[in-house]
Amino acid sequence: MYRFKFIIAAFFCLFIIGGASAQDNISPERKQAIDSLALEKVRDLSKYISIIGNKQTPFSEANRVMDRAEELFAEGSEMGVSSLNSKEINYYKVRQYFERLMALNYDRVNIKWYDIHYISDLERQPDGRYVGVVTIYQRFEGTSDDGMSYKDTTKKDITIYVERKKTQIQGRTIEFWDVLLGDIRVTETTA
Image (cartoon, rainbow, N blue to C red; front, side):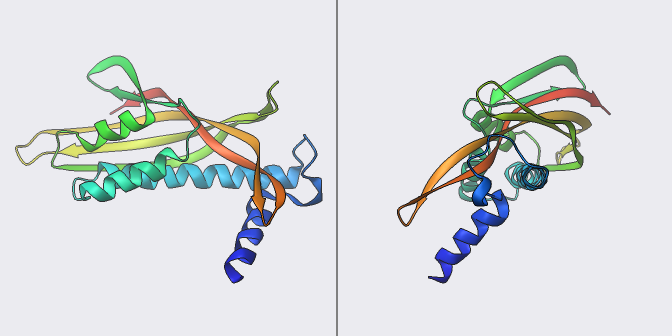
């Protein structure tokens, strides 16, 4: 029973549904909660990427974390990869990106995200979803025992989708706003 009450409380706190859940517009209070949830999901992704890229992470743990990280994304999302050695930016489906990250040819990989913030406000789309953009900076460092080393800093824009969802709890339908991450686009890569 305690677990059920906790789940109900989490829905009300995280998604601020209450009596206004039938409205299509997002109130300032709800928007603030959605913004917090979006930034929390971006920070979670940052942690997951660090774990997946860390060469000390056991294969089974990396796969488990990849599964969790994939749940943060809208279907079909892609992630951009850039390099100081090329002007080309390659885009990969989320799972493929994680698998490539895990297979990087370095003995040590350190990935840090910082300066995470919204650069565009949520805008309502014709399909009823809201879309915004969060910007992050990623510091990548890869080193090998044979002396191979690579470092860069990449500015990335993450599309954020906010949409209505429904769930059943003890026979009652509860509506809530959920946040999914979309494409992650590379906007700049520097040393």
